[in-house]
Length: 328
Ligand SMILES: Nc1ncnc2c1ncn2[C@@H]1O[C@H](COP(=O)(O)OP(=O)(O)OP(=O)(O)O)[C@@H](O)[C@H]1O
Ligand code: SF4
Ligand SMILES: [Mg+2]
Image (tube, rainbow, N blue to C red; front, side, top):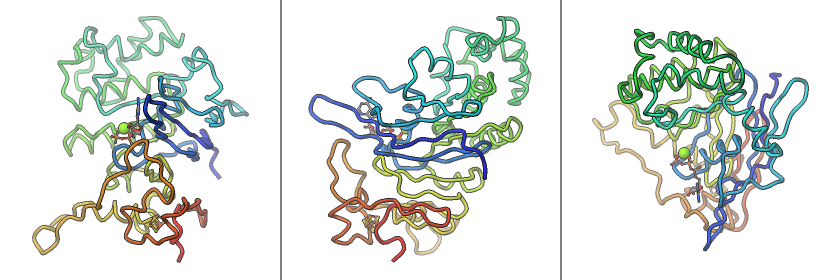
């Protein structure tokens, strides 16, 4: 069995607003193995970003990661709980052992500085070299992420790059310190389909070369089958289903996963009678107290039992599913 590099146990993140409380992530447990690509999938507002910001300890007031949550990172022959680390200790982890990339690469770069200096900056921040060493490493990194004319492009400012090229720059920046874990939060959502495929190919190539693990966040189930090893489906902050990517896609067990798969357009479908399926209703309002199954109001298979209490996760044959009727 593969070694677990990260183990998240009972992660609960809540926002305490003046008029209500929003539980964005609700007792979420999952693990990430070394060399693994794990996808976290869910509609907008399901808690994907908050999960990862919680791991990075980047949740600001009025949000709070509850103290009983455990975020265990393998460190040598033991695990450290990131939820117990001070801000100073976390600064040694961020960009070093765990890096993040985002949908909007401009968020990672200062528009006023040339890209070459910014790509290798984390090496300097983590005491892994001088300014000159960092710049040299940045040029190598730009080569590695296949930036053409990398020496010249290192002189450019962020606004001079196309979206896809800036995305490559951001990946180079995230890889600078050879992180064990890369968190990619919808990194391809803003890109055209061809560039999206190139960026996914690049991430996979780097994952194979470096052996790092990746948490890949997306709302697009169609993207992940060939790219990821395992999938977690989130809904309203709760884990609904988890399993190997191929199994979940070829044999979804949770009604929500089934509905997400039915919502994916298929080539040629509009030539016949078919129309694209849309999941009825909408995600629960943040802050709404849900008594039964979070998916009950949209679920085709809902029964009285589903309205009364929240189903527990059933774990069987390497799959996890939170549904009263998954096996009936
Ligand atoms: N700073 C905040 N203050 C209050 N509520 C917040 C805050 N940040 C997130 N939330 C709430 O937490 C929930 C989860 O948000 P999150 O950003 O994790 O969703 P997501 O799954 O990443 O969605 P998207 O696909 O749109 O990025 C949402 O209901 C959101 O309203
Ligand atoms: S528990 Fe009930 S409402 Fe929830 S997903 Fe399963 S069948 Fe649907
Ligand atoms: Mg998000």
